[in-house]
Amino acid sequence: MKKPKAIFNWSGGKDSSLCLHALKENNEYDITALLTSVNESYQRVSMHGVRVELLERQAQSIGLPLKKLMLPEMPSMTVYDELLHQTWKEMKDQGIEYSIFGDIFLEDLREYREKQLEKVQIKGVFPLWNKPTSYLIDRFIDLGFKAVLVCVNEKYLDKSFAGRNLDKDFLKDLPKNVDPCGENGEYHSFVYDGPIFQKPIPFTIGEVVYRNYQAPKESDKQDDTCFSRSPTNHDTGFWFCDLLEN
Image 1 (tube, rainbow, N blue to C red):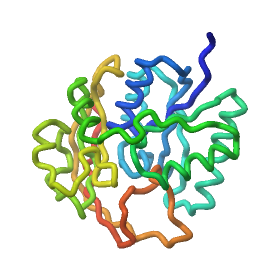
Image 2 (image 1 turned 30 degrees about the horizontal axis):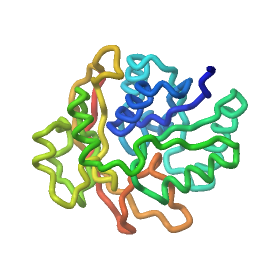
Image 3 (image 1 turned 90 degrees about the horizontal axis):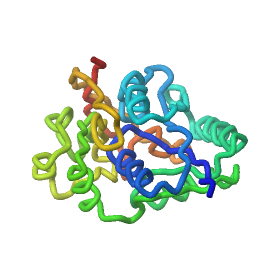
Image 4 (image 1 turned 90 degrees about the vertical axis):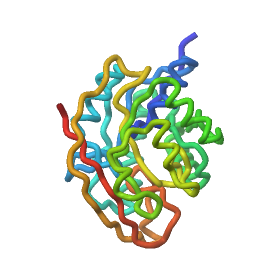
């Protein structure tokens, strides 16, 4: 039986990696490509801050084509929606029936995605939905995935967490108010090894820098492919750990 064509929304982080692993095990969809939002000005993955070169290394090691949704530095919600709609319309024209996400429990984000997809008659799929994050992070580590934290929200974690490996020791040091998967935007990660990769992604830890982002106006709020999933209306600072390609 012919499998339906799907696009996989890839951030380069742990949730995406664990979700893609589950899909490969189930073998239900024909995943044609990875889709990632990229800041065109800086050539980095939106919010995560990972360089495009490392993103491309991931896709090569996974063995799937990479499609980049190129975004201006600070797109308005209208511009973002238009670019996203154009991208998904092109995919629909290419026979894509499903768009797959690694989201876990943010209802408003899922609702946003599904409304946008409905416009082009593509169905959203959320394989990790509502699964306990403590279970998911343990499974991620137990499967042999390896990841490094590339962005941390200063409201939850201090500078020392930027650049740390995502392992059992990391989980022990997490404050109690931090979701173990960072599902509220507490942190973002870059996965460099694991069962979905043909070979590890080589990199070197670079500089840790601080960036502060002003809270968006209600009319300009965007989904987390552009900005952090931080449940706050106040200005927020982030520590970014730069990763350099080897």
